[in-house]
Image 1 (cartoon, rainbow, N blue to C red):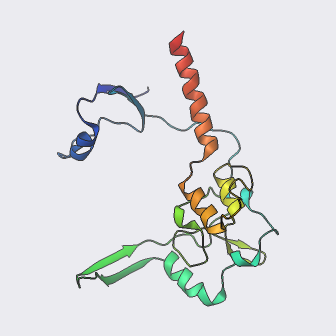
Image 2 (tube, rainbow, N blue to C red):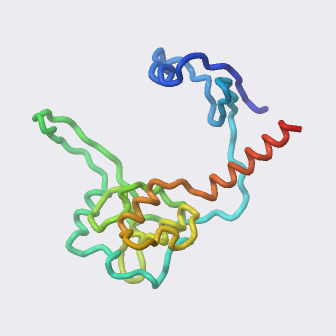
Length: 198
């Protein structure tokens, strides 16, 4: 039995967002939905995909990666610290002490699983908790601009333009959407809209 809900939102959406669930009530929103002219249609869905799944390893440029993308031995302890679990006392600029904790991340990233989300700070050589790192035959390395483009389903070298650095190309991909997903959603919406127009 499918679960769905329909209701109307009246008022300014910014104000509604600011006061949303102040009382801790059960949310009327389910995990999927759309709003048109203030009318909300929401339903509970479960993914039912049975096609080929792309893993991080599927997009790698094996053997085509230049030395600049490989991690330096001198920075391995910094990479390990940033990717690792932490439970430590930190001090703010004003001198306030607080407990900081975060869980560990898979390091290096698993090539047989889906990739994590690309963020705008993906480019550049400096160690970071959020950059993707993969194991290759030649050692640990960051992802190349082409690999980042492939993760977002862009053609190879889509961002390779005169005057655009590899760091900037990575930034572009961190700001991008996965275009193949957007395309599939747009086609599904188009089909539904065409049905409504009949």
